[in-house]
Picture 1 (cartoon, helix red, strand yellow):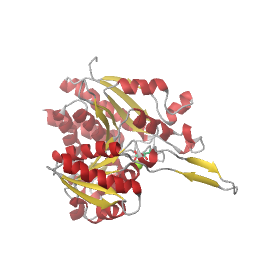
Picture 2 (tube, protein in one colour):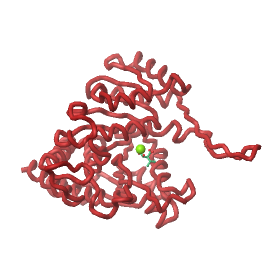
Picture 3 (tube, protein in one colour):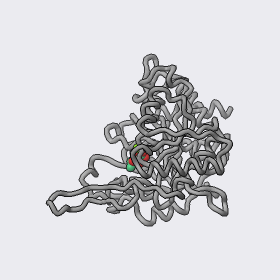
Picture 4 (cartoon, helix red, strand yellow):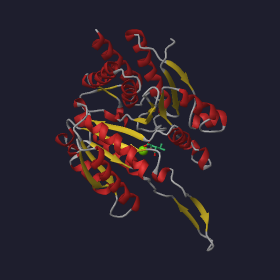
Length: 371
Ligand code: IPM
Ligand code: MG
């Protein structure tokens, strides 16, 4: 169906392929039942793109992604690519998309669904009702800052090194997103770094404080060292509202937060750029936080819910379709409440289903909600 909502679909590798196929069933449902159509184009990325074209991201694919209103991403990677040169590895495709599209703000909401309180490895009272937002800076820090490399040393040894660098501008722009997010939530931001050890952390804290003084009077700002934050996330995660942190700490802390929700298979994400001056919309990519899970790929075992919740974030943040986003999120909650579970969130008394069974349960819940 033709529409003016251009979405590029990049399933990638491993379970990315099957959870994306499941996601497209939700896309079809919205076209059929809500007259909400998307102009979908699909391409390969990661290992799949390497297999077809010898590169994890073709220039054409990047150009199409840049020209889309939103990119819906699956996952990349697999053991068959372990021996590839660094620049050819599947992950480079994902990282190049983030960097070239300047998707600096990575929103990773960790929400515990009532039906999944027991799926967490933590005690129910620690996680029940949890709703926190990890905001990860996605275009800077040790993932991208120069210099980085592996050099030969005069003594015959090699030296591998990365740089963790942040500029005032990079910290300010992620800080503004954190304050904006907090305004729509509980109004509290915790800025996380290691200013006790790292100079980039010293600047991070200073810039956050200045920004707060100048623009953030209506939200509260606290600071925490990253190691303490990891500990606090498992000790008492409900103390947080919005956590804002750098690229590497955000990578670690969001995996940690994911397990609070029961499974890495539950965590969606949105990666947003600056709003376009003409349309007001940011460049955007939506992806589940889980990886390509090669061990269970192609066996109808993958949990598609993080992919569906990423899709809901796309409806909300790129297309302003709040009602449809609510519908998808509610359908996920209802499907879980009906007792259907994929293996990663299986619990006693529940019915174990595959990717297709879980997808059907969500579609049925959407049908029921639309009635
Ligand atoms: C993530 C992933 C990626 C990252 C990998 C796949 C490159 O772990 O999105 O958290 O490290 O950012
Ligand atoms: Mg990660």
